[in-house]
Amino acid sequence: LLFPRKFRMGCIQSQEEEDNGFKQEAMMAIGRSERITRKVDGGPSSSWRNKPISKSKIAKSKRPKMDDSADSKANSEAEMSKSVRDRQNGINVTNSPAPQLDEDGRLKFSEILKRRIVGNEMSEVPVVSTTLTSTNSMIVMDVAACTQRGWYPDDPHKPNQDSYSIEYKFNGANMEDDSFLAIYDGHGPVGEHFANYAKKNLPKLIKKYVKQERVKKHKKRNDNLLEGEKKIPFNPKLWPNLEPSEYIRASTKAHMECNQNMIDTQPLVSLSGTTAISAAIHNGNLIISNVGDSRAILGVRDSSSSPSSSDSSKGNDSGNVDGKNSIVAVPLSKDQTPWRKDERERVIKEGGRVMTIKQMMAAGNTDEEGNVKLKTVHSEHHERITDQDNMDGMFGDRALGEGGDIDEEGDPPRVWLKNKNLPGVSFTRSLGDSIANRVGVNAEPETFAKAITDDDKILVLASDGVFEFIPNQTIIDLCAESKDPAQACTKIVDMAYHQWLKYEDSTDDINIIVMFLKKMDAKNLVITV
Image (cartoon, rainbow, N blue to C red):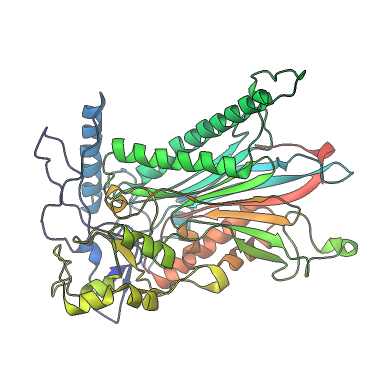
């Protein structure tokens, strides 16, 4: 039997809404995989991807208020549904030529490169503009990004559902040491739409709420002037920067609003959405906001193994340092998945179920042919395997990526509605995904902040297409061996792509941003963006 490693949805069953003639979302369930399929226990070569669910109607969610663009939204919804159905039926909706394959049925190297984009390179962009020493040195960053479209043999024209943001002078033209970087990993029938929606709208919302926080701080500063002190003009260049807690408050509001806007306005939101992880550089601080299972890791110089000043020829400040593990991987985020006990307990408290595909099969939720039943079977075994104590014993409290821990089995715990076998997502937070949102899969980001120091050498943001089979430290080691971020991106994407093919017949979309941090004399600064 084949089942998906990290499927999001199943095969399309479109249906008409009963009022106003609007198309309801093309509902997805177990039959169609957004990601990868794998053989289990030497079973027959048949895929969950091709097994339709029963045509039982799914309860309609409350439709959001419709504005003047209701007709446009309905048309977009119908077009998206048709596009997904056509693609799944083998119709080339992109009009692009069929990719060239080798004798093993895999993409030729030239085709792999056609699906790869390396770009957004920046160099010597200020990160901490205040002087660090009497020599007037500052910390700057070099940045590059790379995205690799996945390969799905039964869906060769499936678009890349990942996207990313890199913005310099993020919160104002005068703020050279203020930047924003983010990774978006879309999922579902139109995941690329939601990744691009987040790319377009989330940074704008963060800017809006950062501006509000700075204005509020400016007014408070003027209200607390001592007698005789002049009021500071209302000029954005003079507004105070934010403390990490203030920036985090702004970022949290932005994520929550972006999610609600998706749910209220976007077609096919029931089973489509995106994860988002971002790194904001503001006032000399690094602020991470994470929703989903993408990841941020920091490469920190290990002072116990770093070269001495008298032996500086062995390395340089870009992170290219001799000696294994002289730069240590430090996680700045934790994957929000049911592998985590706290996340698992939270979604269960909100009314969700947590089960793997194998557990659903063992509980009687599939028929003899492997099709998943919509009606939950409440057997004694089902009650046993969904007991919280047993789940803690089976799933534990894993921090994937740390200490070399990766999920090689490919059957992760998933979130389901209590009485329906939907949506089966393998993450516990996201933007969009209105069905999963009913049972605690929300968009409140987990955040982390720290002051940037001279020991911080490498920052990596990447989707789970990178981290699925590669531990954190290996990623940092590849960066440390590279001459610049662009080379590091290429090395990591190459390794991730081949690791997917080692375990699977297909590959996920792969998306990464790499930043090298270095110290340099401010007099020699030449910013390139």
